[in-house]
Amino acid sequence: MKMYYAAIDIGGSYIKYAVLDHWGAIQTKHKQLTPENTGNGILLTIQRIIEKLQVSYVLSGIGVSTAGIVDRAQGKIVYAGPTIAHYQGTEIASFLHQTFAVPVHVENDVKAALLGEIWARGLADPANIYLLTLGTGIGGAYYTDQLMDGHYGNGNSIGYMLTNPTDHSNYETRASTNSLKRQLQQYPELPSTIEALFTEAEKGNKEGQELLHRWGTNVAQGIAEIMLILNPSMILLGGGISQQESRLLRYIDPHLDLYLPDKRFRTPLQTARLQNDAALLGSIYPFFQEEII
Image 1 (cartoon, rainbow, N blue to C red):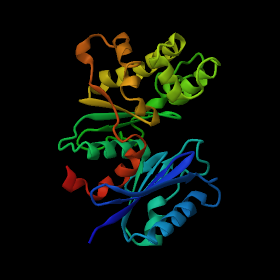
Image 2 (cartoon, one colour):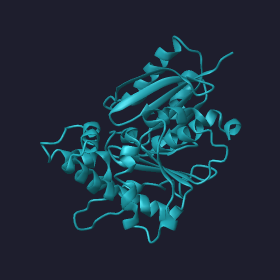
Image 3 (cartoon, rainbow, N blue to C red):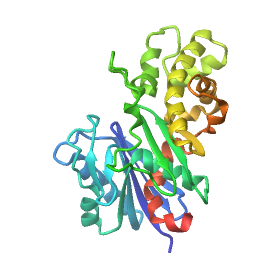
């Protein structure tokens, strides 16, 4: 009998959800606005989503990827920023397991996205791979034989690094996609969307190119730090902006040399393949991890 799994991706703006089969193929996919998290609003929304999916599918398990720092063993949110109110302490796995009586895995969204990329690339020996996601903020995940969380579970919180004590800016306030959007608003003569900005720059618009290079220099600084500290075999760039693929890399890659002592310290830099579906796929990866690797 074919087995199906619910995949839930909880973000500050949207909850994405899908049903995937045993091979990771998406059968159906949807998204809806993340509700105000009062009175267990997020848990109750997920419950309704899964009940709706069960009308068409017999689910063998539930995978959840989510913003925040996750205690993987307990399936619980141990730290959450201001994006989702009243989220810290939410016991996702316990609630879903008691409600639906199926196995439940809960993972941080960036870490889940890295697992999804490893699965999609068919990597038999996925050692020393780093994923950096550019979006509202900047997130990081590192896999070397297993996901590396750090001793206290807070590792790879890279958005907070490179803090400037003078203006209190940090890596994500200078180099996230949101930062690029804010900078773009200062140029009324340029297109208003990121995708259109890349297209305009590709056509030769000098102001657009200069803006992307300035932003890309900030992105490169953090990537260089990762290369110097971890020396991974590969760094992947994820988030919606990774859909720009080579158009994105050309505004980041040349600036790495500003921060590296020599080219021998470089790590191959690629864009993620799955983009916004990576965390959905990665959320159910633990169900099959032993047989995939």
